[in-house]
Amino acid sequence: MIVFTFIGSLLGAMALGMPIAFALLVCGAVLMLQMNMFDAQILAQKLVDGADNYLLMAVPFFLLAGEIMNLGGLSRRIVDAAMAVVGHIRGGLGYVAVLTALVLASVSGSAVADTAAVAVLLIPMMRNAGYEVGRSSGLIAAAGIIAPVIPPSIGFVVFGVTAGLSITKLFMAGIAPGLMLGAALIVTWWWLARSESVEPLPRQTPRQIAVALARSLWALGLPAIIIFGLKLGFFTPTEAGVVAAAYALFVSVAVYRQFTWRNLYDALLNAAMTSAVIMFLVAASMVSAWLITVANIPDQIIELVRPLMEHPTWLMLVLMVIVVLVGTALDFTPAILILTPVLMPIVKEAGIDPIYFGVLFIVNNAIGMITPPVGGVLNVVCGVARIKMDDAVRGVWPFLLAQLVVLLLLVLFPALVTVPATWFR
Image (tube, one colour):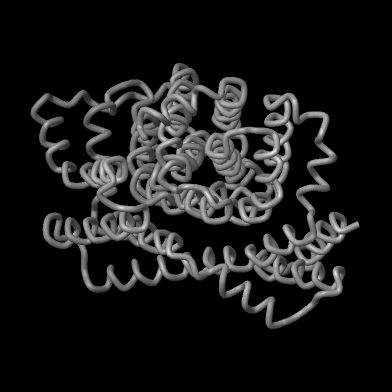
């Protein structure tokens, strides 16, 4: 009965049009009433406790770093470097989009911010070059969702805080799967680009390539600083966010000199608004997570999936299918916050490595950002490219399928995650 009360109250509040954070609070209040333990003071205290977490400070700093990169010219120089290296290949601008997304993913960890940056820079260029806009938008959207998988990932921060896992270990375990997602997009684009009649860009001379790489060296240095700093233990994930924001600001102001006080205001405002939404969601989810534990809901669900406990691969397949279905209706962060306290006890009971599960869980939820009808990243590229959602869906489906194949391989062969994770760790 408690399980149905939890699901029914949450879905009912969402059906009334409530924002997810308020729906989670309503769900928590209903559960407290169901268990005859309602106390507004406890509700408020758990809400405050949910946001009172040092690790969550990484979120606004990484968001700020991404905003500064976009406004300060770092993203533009990364695109120029990628164009100089691979722009002359057939379908070159598509490869530029994927490579740029991979680099940006290793800085901000926000799919929406990275997708917007790449889309603003490359969609007009791809349209003018003669590429089909729907397919180009689909590629950029699919490349954008790599951001929550490659460190520093805001998704890993939220999941790590909610699940009580090491964020640094999650970061290191996400590198290889993120690169696999990028490789899948490159292969898919290569297959599709064979039929493109677009003339590639002129081949750059070695001198021109060297100049482009030299101009982007400061921008390309930021991902290296973050990843090696985390691996060598120079700073924590939260401190890495501060380093990223400070470095991006220094390069934008002192090196590229494209950053103004007005840009700083815009960057701070955008990062603050996005951070406020995420922090409120996390705080509200902690109320529900606490009540889910008190109501013993995970144990009830464990009993339902008990027959699969002896078969971890089948259990992972079932869990991933559930997450895929939820991802079509819920956005990235709410899906993590709602499902994590329910699924983690099942994973631990089955003896599945929580870090391994966390990586697949984040990959799955990231893919949900390009699945209709919600598809937050799809909405971003539709707005930038000024195309209908139907066109974006038709353009993204080959890349969506390729990323689902990668997810399936990660389920069937856990070593694809666990072995590289030990290398990077």
